[in-house]
Image (cartoon, rainbow, N blue to C red; front, side, top):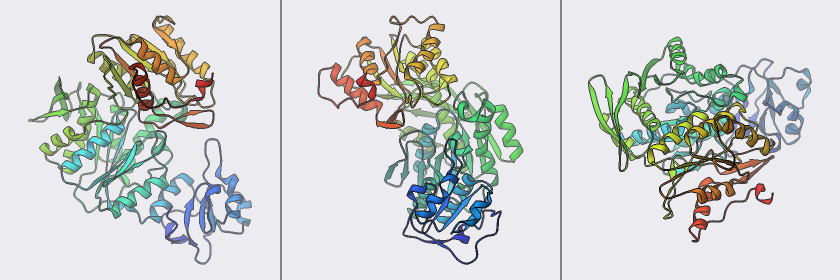
Amino acid sequence: MDLEQRRELTEIFQEIQIINNPPDGKINLTGISIDSRKVRKGNLFLAIPGTSVDGHAYIQDAVENGAAAVAGSNPSRRYQNLPVPYLQIVNSREALAHLTAAWYGYPARKLIVIGVTGTDGKTTTVNLIHQILLAAGFQAGLISTVNAVIGDQTLDTGFHVTTPEALDVQRYLARMVESGITHVVLEATSHGLAQKRVAACEFDMGVVTNVTHEHLDYHSDFQGYLDAKAELFRLVSVSKKKSAPYTKLAVLNKDDGSYSSLKGVVGNVGVKMIDYGIISAADYQAKNIQPVPAGLAFTVEKANQKTEFQTSLIGDYNVSNCLAAVALCIEGLGIDWQKAVDGVKNLLGIPGRMEGLDLGQNFSAIVDFAHTPNSLKRVLTTAREITSHQVIAVIGSAGLRDKGKRRLMAEVSAELADLTILTAEDPRTESLAGILQEMADGVISMGGIEEQNFWRVPDRGEAIRFALQLAKPEDVVMICGKGHEQSMCFGDTEYPWDDRTAMLSALAEYLEMDGPDMPYLPTQDQ
């Protein structure tokens, strides 16, 4: 929060319902904080109930650190006797988004905001849309789980993959407005939607890439997960109309199992809908998908229109992502077809997505973010298309997350990879041995034989080294699950980690040449 500016308390609460009596007199605030340890004199402390920690328990600490006012959803009378005003509100998380938006002058109302959600392909689709917008001459920015792009600036948005907190999202949007940006593409994860981090983003258009098995630990069941994704279209329906030319729009994947349910949601909220597909007959359909030296070529058919596209991305699933971006930009913003062709071609790749690393070895070494059963199936299928030789997969599954997918991912790898190496991927406070056992059970159920076609190698760096030792000429070695991420969690500690650095280190060692050091993980000491 920018401490150089001030806001009057009632000014930022204009669109937030206060259940108890608002305070008398003016209270000038210096910022908003949701962490009592970071409260500074004059801040508003917003108490947010979390899954493991309730911010209301730290109200007294926030007051002692200088909070000028406190807001929270707990109706307890004890908060009425604080030495500073306590404002009772309905939903602290939703209030955070709107209060922060008000602090920055509601920046999303000055931008055309495009939301992209889905299980897999969100980041790629965000970047595709961004490139098409740039090719069409728009001043465009993006906010993804990898980074935020504001003009010539690229900002890291964090270690792990989720939509940034509302405080950061609104700050990025405000900086975009200041920079003269008119259109922004925002990656909206299911957590970001469910936790109201993007509630004040005033979405004008929304895209769903797909909805498959993921985050069921958080959303309880698949319907809860689907409902979180559908929230994007409800937000599109209620956003205020803006002066720039655009069409409120929902873009759905007709090939995906979520299509019928989401179509019903879109119909209920009254937003125009179009669909895209490769298999299904759709408004925007890709045909004649062919590998070319630089990637893939394909035809997009829309009514009587047929347009040739080329992308440096590989895998049919990326053609689907291209379709989503093209459909949104043409239907929602009236962008010329040739500009869409140019934008798709201009995207040369996404960090940690099917990213090849080459130090002169005689096999392919690829890093990918695939961390769900569906995404793993897609990338391993693509790997099989790249080579007629062995596919070697290094995979793990995160601790304290959706446990059901562990066995599923192992089964996918057993089916599609020739050799599978099970290793660490953010075990957190869970037993790494226990996670690997669950995955090993999945491989064994598919006929896998340990020490013959699958192995358990707990240390991720050692697992990558081992995969390279197994590789033969023209094989494909796939390191999946971390992609662009910059840390790995053991216990409560985030250790600096990048799969690409680890792969380059292992490749350099394998080729007996200079290279980066292998990043440290505590499994190296075991």
